[in-house]
Length: 252
Image (cartoon, rainbow, N blue to C red):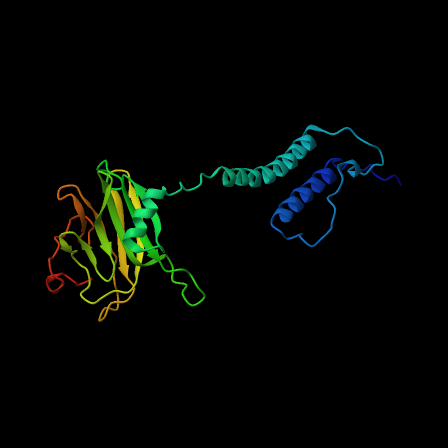
């Protein structure tokens, strides 16, 4: 009785081995084989199972190319990220004259946060603040300040345009929406808009009688030529009050 010759596809084992190889590479990249020393099967050991070395077919060559592409992709992403981190521009150094002016307004423990044409009015301004440092007992998110100021240079002299201490004020008086009770700390958010200039958001950390406090938006008003607070839509400016008793303090 004669056995039928083995007519199995000689490339099935080779394809299976390559699939295992691709899976192992993927798992290694995911950290699943970080503590193992298993070896990837060598391509030289892949055979048809007949004991004779055969020439690699087109299908096997395609699978081999796929493995190479996986390996190349793994290394390129990490190197690209490293290159981007190295080329990230550093923040510009604060000019000495601006730092000195900021120290005159708020003392030696003052950090300049922004400077330049902040109001888009062609004049040099800076935003500086006394920042509460992060500690194990003080880990509140964001930038927390006790005082902040925006100043502008005119003919070599710096003048104060906006002050944040216990209240929010400008040279005309108390800003709309500033709380009547004194605020000991504010969470400060700020961004530079290409068209509207510097936009500030002050959130009181604790206000007597209020359980939920919303940010107070402040921006340069080109019509009045000063920094003013805005309504809750952040679209309309609010007038100042010369006295704190008449200032609008409702935060809704």
